[in-house]
Image 1 (cartoon, rainbow, N blue to C red):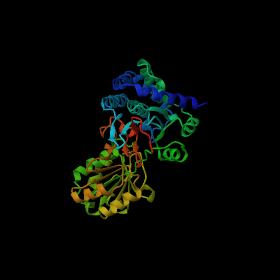
Image 2 (image 1 turned 180 degrees about the horizontal axis):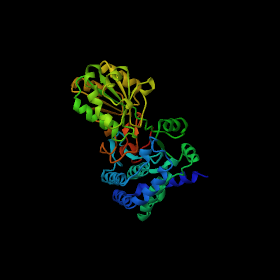
Image 3 (image 1 turned 90 degrees about the vertical axis):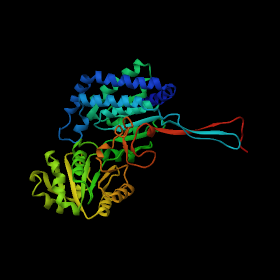
Image 4 (image 1 turned 30 degrees about the horizontal axis):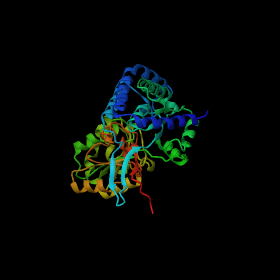
Length: 415
């Protein structure tokens, strides 16, 4: 198949977005939100076809699964994006030089944004909304595991674009076959930036093989440290929420670190997890303490590989540390630099943790489940970047822009 035609049409479509006004952009997104809800039954029927291909115990199953409530949430995110201010045309710098050249630094779209993703049909709508709002064309390559869902959502988007007489190539959904991935990785000159969303293996593959600049949205190996002064009730609620709210997402908790001076509270701290059927992998000290209280079938002795694992399931590692310093060292060794949290009532320890932990999002006395573009007031997100160049953390509208220098003169020449 000649994939070049897809990329050429996408590049051409990016020029047409420049002339769209905010009113038109927001009207499209609002209409799309209503259209997705109106097509809920059709989308769910196609989603069932995808679910039938995946074992229910697969960690990606929950990400793949849609429901009327989840479609309504996607629609609400679209409306939120429509209601946000556009980041385009912002003037970062404005000056007139001695030679009377007037120079401005102005925000502009990235251009054509490619996204490779796995079992996440919501990404199809989320990425389109954020790209469209920022004047970017979206070229999407979903996995075969979500093929029917992605095709149906893309069809609804194209119908709304047609209604508004907008070039439907502002959204391109590539075929689900593997060859399309290779073509996208090599679409230099057509696609400006590539964003992988999925497993660590997918992210590594894209980073190692892409000829296009890549923004990594990395895996989440997430820790919460329960400090010597941690509030037990806060800790119980935060840890339970961070682990069980939605286990298949990257902000889900993977490891609890507890100060050795609070071991008497360990059983109570983790007791809600038993009701949530969370399987623990506990180090030697915590295992001995939990044997008397935690369900035997859910309690295991940890092996070295359990630390530094993104479980994406109802599994959690537990480790006892001597103090904050040891907790910080453990996090530095095993963190994927996504989200990390401390539960403490000690202001100095909180300040040290927030300052020293190298992660895209750091928390004090709150669940890491909040690491999400919508929760951060971004409307939605195109991914959560764990790198430091260009973007870090939840990527919303501003992270989908670049800038250019606009220079106005009156005949000046350089000597």
